[in-house]
Length: 203
Ligand SMILES: [Zn+2]
Image (cartoon, rainbow, N blue to C red; front, side, top):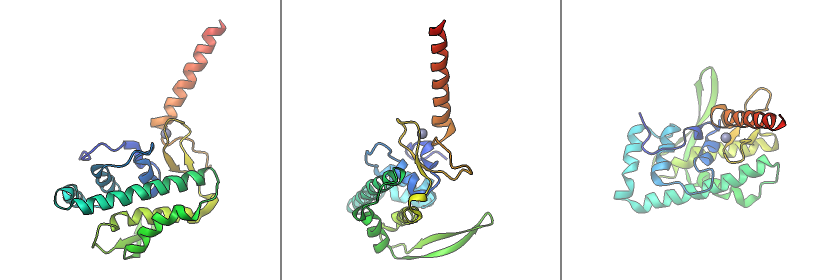
C-alpha cells in the first residue's frame, strides 16, 4: 500500500529507529504532520488504522497536533546534533539530550522483552493517553545509541550531498553508503566517468 505522503524510500535504511527519524529530513527542513504520521506508520509505531485517524487529527484538535509536531521538530534537531557529534567523535553536550529526556520523562510505560527471529529485544510499551508516546520509542532508540558511546558505529553517508545517517552493523565496519543503490552505485558511476574522461584527455 502506498504511503500517504512520499517519505524518501531510503530514509528507513539507517538501521536504528532514531537514525531513520533524523533521516526523514536530512537537510533540516521541518517535518510536516503527514510526513511524521507516514514515518510512524512505516516504522510500525502505529498501525495503518491508527495512522489514518491521526492524519485527521489537525481538523479536530489542531492544538494537540501542533504540540506534537513541535516536540518532534525539537527531538529531531537534538538528535541531528547528537549524532553529528558522535560521527565526529565529539563530546555530546548535556543540554542536547534534554529533548530526549523530556519525552522519556513524561511518557509513562514500561519495557517488555519480545522474541523475534531467535533474538530477544526490549520493546517499549507506552500507555496510550496523550500523543507524546508516539515519540517515546524514537527517544528510547536514541538514548540506547548515546549509551553506546564513542564506539557506536554511527556514520554519515560518504556522499556529501546525501546527509543520511546509518548504523554500520556490517561485519567489517567499513560500510560507506546509506545504500549501495542510492549513493554507492552513483559514486561508482561517477568515478568510472571521471576515469574514462581522463583516459580520453590523455590520448
Ligand atoms: Zn547516501
